[in-house]
Length: 295
Image (tube, rainbow, N blue to C red; front, side, top):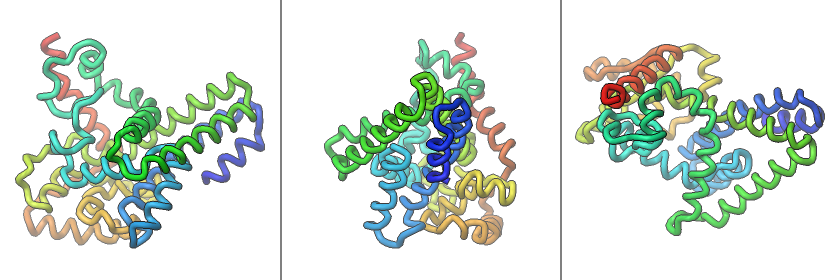
């Protein structure tokens, strides 16, 4: 899909039809990022070395995002999902996921947090740019492993991407292509991960492994199309319990895990894709309530 989309970009050439290719590439970049996610969990290769090589090709070269930075961040998320202090995915940044984080926020952040449920999807258009900025910041930290190699690979991606746009398209077409491509990429990638934990309980840190992983996660139903669109994270409970399990095996493990949770008395959350977004947005709206009340 990635090779085909770039081939279509070259064949169509300097035409506004390339905007459709930009949207397609946004979808394809998200699928490649999901593949990098599976590689990072060693679902593809058993050992570390080939996983790192393939992961850097998928993330740094194909997508332009630091593989090492994302893997370190994602590992911390898996160790303590939805923990207010230990999970980097719920720590307060532009959006907030815990009511306590709302107090004292003013200015642009305060405005965003008061209306964050309504602004959630528009803000996802910036996710792709945020991933790149975060990657560059991480590469500047001395403690990061192989940061020189990753910097070179990400620079190769950036140079090749900008060169292709400027050689094939007019400046205005190149700008529109860039905006559409990265907006679709950000929205699609954000929509694959948002249903998994947002709006679920925040643990205290004293739960056992089963409850820490299951109570903070929700599965998304929908059949084969949902499996393809979300790339495996829709079986979030099974993925968090067995992160190295290859994605095609997650639906096979699902009924076994669900039956075990029922016997153990552990709530097992499963809902449709649309309802998962409703729950996440309701949570965002509720978290911003103190700011709206103070206003």
